[in-house]
Image 1 (cartoon, rainbow, N blue to C red):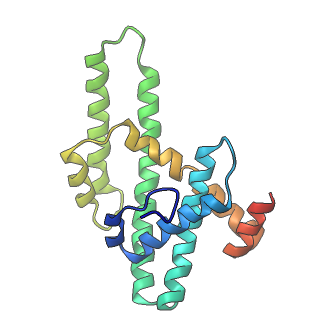
Image 2: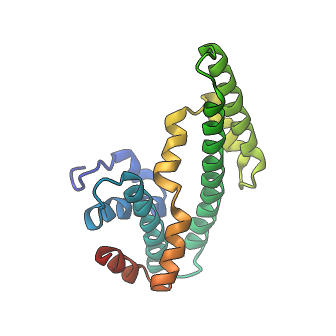
Length: 184
């Protein structure tokens, strides 16, 4: 679209309002706060601020406790459960890879990896998502790859740290938190 340095694709305009707000705020965060040489920190921070900012947007636009805000919050709860599961699954995959010896045959490694990923996907139905079966069905069609799992490390691994800091230093005030980060 040409407005932001990272692409916002035209198909994204069909996203739910809160998700689109989160994406735009995520991208704007990069132009406000950027720590050179630490992509994981920057992406995790931008995701955190994007999510918090989108919640504020929904409250401002529709009103606190509106049905739109509640729907956004419920979807974010599902996302959080999914993200935590994906992060744990990433660690399971990492442990599997570390268990391989140099002598292990590639076919053996791939079979072990595919079996674990299929178990992870099947486990989606049981992690307490509103519609876990839908997630499992989507990922069963084409098993996720390493890049899928690594994205959760890049974008979601530090969310708890940011949330804790957010409430400690600004008592949940996003504007104060951003100012704090800029001065850090």
